[in-house]
Length: 369
Image 1 (cartoon, rainbow, N blue to C red):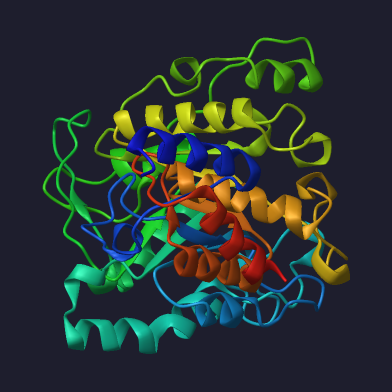
Image 2: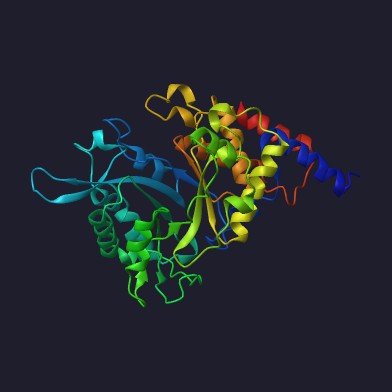
């Protein structure tokens, strides 16, 4: 009879090959909540039109099911027809003409889902959508307008009380939509500091990025991959700062384009970062894990490219197995399919592996064909 010790050893071997290990399916499906380490979500990177392309991105993201995270990049632009300034969703300034507003593109799109959720009151499934706001400008009028827009839809939101003890995490009042902002101090000033005590926080920021030493960007990026998890994630969660956001280069030096074969050291590095974030009561997000599948890399960011679907999927599996909360990728459907494969094979954390290694490999090989 195979001993438990041998089962764990063989499962660990497969983990190094595929970035995963076998656990009962219920351990993945069951959602006790949405706190750090309790669920892993597709983070639909740049889910908005760009230069006339990808006009269906938000539909594609929603088609993968919920819960799901959706990123929207924001600018502040004057409408030449009306003279009013608007919150625009776009990748950069040269794409602002003709770009949609945040309200028309995102909030109007999810309205049926939100209204149905409020009617059904299945609160154990909330939040259904995590909106990741990537501010490309931090002008006060833009931040004020976003805060006001969130107030218009406050009945949808996951909120927390603004208290006079900002370093103490207050409990959420859970709605079907959770909004995340960034680490910029201007965002904190608008979304937390300017909110009166007793009112509700409508968005939740990231902790400030670690200050890596170095004379230039290349040196600083190299040092990020050498810094310990405690150095990279020093603060604990506060009432406003609830997550941490990393490029993949903190896991593998140089990021996706320079990544070699996935190995045990990489897995240990990733696990240390996830464990530290969750110890600090923070969600953790990594961006952006792409493979430029079937020629779909046109217009995507080259520095995010691992070079193949297999390489990208290996990192998706590893990040899921490690308990990463938000995995950002441009390949929404492929990520969703990989998640379905993991569920069919019973893949999750390495903490409690069961079953012979050959069964894990056989399942993965069958579903990868």
